[in-house]
Length: 198
Image (cartoon, rainbow, N blue to C red; front, side, top):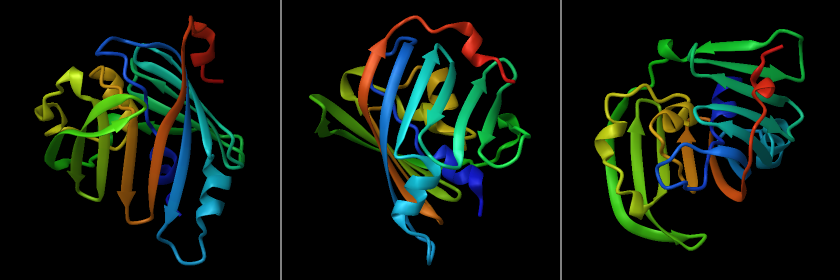
């Protein structure tokens, strides 16, 4: 099983109107498994039905209620993602510059749907091995060119660097479909120490 694929598919943020965000966001995740004998419920059990993100500008720490995924920390200075699973003591380290999930095409449906009182543009990003849909506050008027020619395996890191904060995201690959939606957002000061990788 490609654990990394499951870990990255649950990333969604509420809009902050193009500005860098500092605070806490809670997301609700749902999964549709494409693997025989792997239920939707089991994916949620492993990787979390709820994720809490502590975000400070480009950095974030994800805390999961899943039995396998415990936390992730993204360090933009190194452009690395550190992952702690419940099995084993060694951290998983992914160098994002080495990832190669290239964007093939981007389709935009302007003012496609209203979510949580926000009228959203839908961005459908077709990658080599996945289809990724982002629902972004239409008042931000995001240019779809920003998605093109990008390495796009780890969406939250890419989005925060470009100050794009979707309300909802749907990721489909050969293993699963994951839908994530923000259910709580709270701006507050985040302690730098939480981003220390231990």
